[in-house]
Amino acid sequence: MSSKDKNLSSSTTDLDISDKHIGIVWSKWNEDITSALKNGCIKTLTKHGIKKDALTVIEVPGAFELPYGAKLLLGQKQMHAVICIGCVIKGETKHDEYINKTVAQSISMLSLTANKPVIYGVLTPNDKQQALDRAGGKYGNKGDEAAITAIQMIHLSDQLPQTKQSIGFN
Image 1 (spheres, helix red, strand yellow):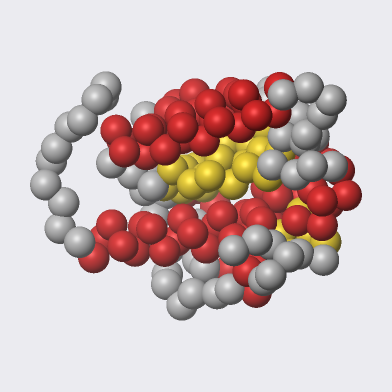
Image 2 (cartoon, rainbow, N blue to C red):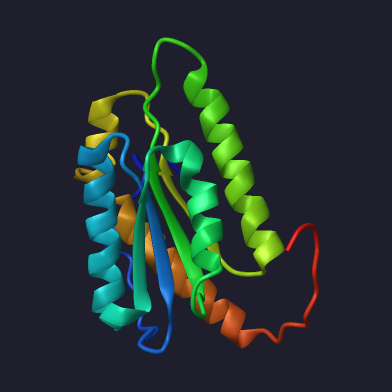
């Protein structure tokens, strides 16, 4: 479902994360957009009970570096989830397609190999206005939605018994 069809920023959950550790890695590229996404994400996590010392936020230069930043965060403390925040705006070349595909695949693979939720909170708009509309504008703040997704995935992980399995690289 596209953002035009529904504003999911009003989504909520009653799940408590006061005993969880969450990391946020955000891209400085398109900082006006990504800082709004990051701030929305932090606000939502705080509203759901995360403690200040249980939230680790790091900055990377661009979206391409998000997976490595997420990997670093997964190695810290007892991370229950990592949220990746970025924005790659379409340009005159296909650069955005290469970046977006690589980042999405890397985040997905990292989540599977780490056996932890690694949330894709990367905007892929055609222009800056579309990004602004999704970073606190008329389609809400996708940073809020990334936080809710992380909370729901942590809860799901807690509900289903896990066996220690390893796939890929550790």
